[in-house]
Length: 261
Image (cartoon, rainbow, N blue to C red; front, side, top):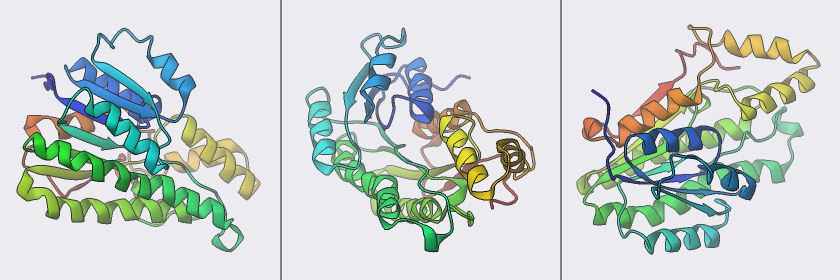
C-alpha cells in the first residue's frame, strides 16, 4: 500500500536541490502541500517549472543561517497556513577538510551556524504551528558522521552529533504535544556535495579522486552509494500516519556503515 500524505503541510529547509528537492517531490507525489526555502534563487527558479507544482508547492528565497530571513520566511508561510504537519531541517554544508589544528576558525563557526543553529531557528518557529495542528513530525537530517568519528571533517562531525542531541531532547520535550522528532542519518549520498568532499579529501591526501571514491564505497557493508531517493522515502514515512509511534530515534540510511574515516 502506497503511503498517503494527502494535504499534509510540510516545510523543508534547503529544499530546492539535492535531498531537499528529492524529498519535496516524493511528498508532492503523495498529495502533500510543500513549502520550500532555499538560499539559491537559481535553484528555486529551476524547480518552479516542475510539473508536480500544481499549486501545492510554494517556494521562497531564504538564508537559513540568518534568523531574520528565517522569521520572514515563516511569516510568508503563515499567510497561507496557520498550522503544519511536518518540518524537515535539511539545510547543511560539508564544511572544511583538514586536520583540526590547520582549520580556519571562521570555517568552523560557519559550519556550526548553518548545520546546527539554523535548525534552532526553524524548529523554534515551527513548533507553534505543529501545536496548532495537534501534533506532527520534525525530521533533522543528521549523518552517519553524527554517530561515529570522521577523520579530517571535525566541524561537520561535531555539527551532526549535535543534531542527535537536539533530536533526543526535543522528542522528550514535545512528546506530550504529539510532536514526533527523529533524526535521519544518510551515509555516502551520491551527488554534488559528496563530489566536493571527495575532491577536497583527494587534494588533501594527494591521491586520485577515484581512490577516495572507492574508499567511501568500502565503508558500508553493501558497498554502494546511497541515493537521494532513499532518504526521501524514509522522510515521507516519518511524516505519514504509519509512523505515529516513532519518536526520538536515530535512523541510519547508510547501507550499514562499518567505518567512517
